[in-house]
Length: 195
Image (tube, rainbow, N blue to C red; front, side, top):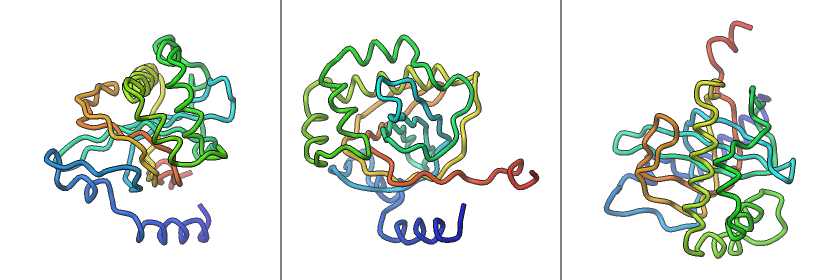
């Protein structure tokens, strides 16, 4: 990462709460959307959508009081795809048979010309957040054991929270955040530093 990119992220972080701060009053209170936050996530990146620019990021963050799942749709590839990431598994394709869920995915793409309010309205349709969480669960399950998630720091706009428990692979999420990434910065690993 360049110094300018790091500085831009540091500036943005000063304006956003961390996931732990945002959910400090869980489970008695859930932040009302839309809102933005950041957190560390072991993330998988998935392509394979009809729009090849569209990417789904899934992962989980274990916080002191809860586990947060992430279901983020964007149109920018901020991290490098790993193996087996370009084809949607059958469970994910089934989740996308819901036309209102497909509409919500399109609205969550970061370069979509419509407003945040349109995304929030699409996600308010009964069953849509459940369909998107089912999509994220199917995709995440597909990746586990086939690829290693990347440690990333994610800043994201959150448009909906879906209460769990939801199984994202081996993680049982208490809440799943649905939104669009503002930034995704790969966290350096020991292997990265040695190469």
